[in-house]
Length: 164
Image 1 (cartoon, rainbow, N blue to C red):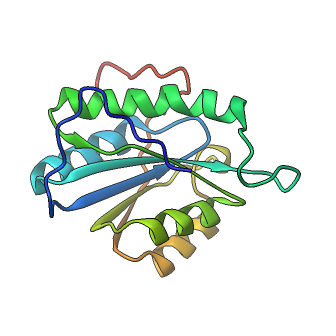
Image 2: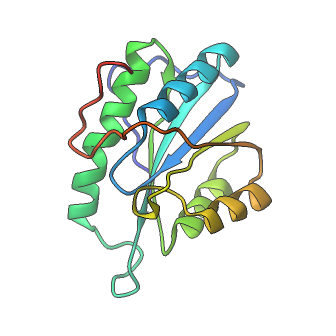
Image 3: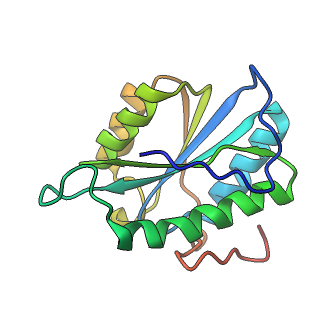
């Protein structure tokens, strides 16, 4: 399931490069966001933040999962607003899968990306584990960068630190 946000967005240019930043767990590190926005600006690309939702086996893949979506949307909107404040083209996504790998695979099968920036955190609950990062680096369909900053993350309440 992909959600698109259309409010206050710079129109994506036809043929523009696309930078994917997948994240999950209710947070995205501000250093990762800042790095992604700098790369998007330098390449005059479209910023594609994608929140990945893991659907437990006890639910069907198309279950509404309202609590997960309710936590994801404010964070995704905060990330989108940060990019829009920089006057960058944004094409935000929500993707679901049985695992983070499955959700990424579904996103990669549906769309093409020129570069992927993977946020790596020491806490597996709020990012990609070492095994997932290794899998992504091996299977990603585009140039992939892994970034592991040491700062605190943006939490699911949607508030961004002033430094971002």
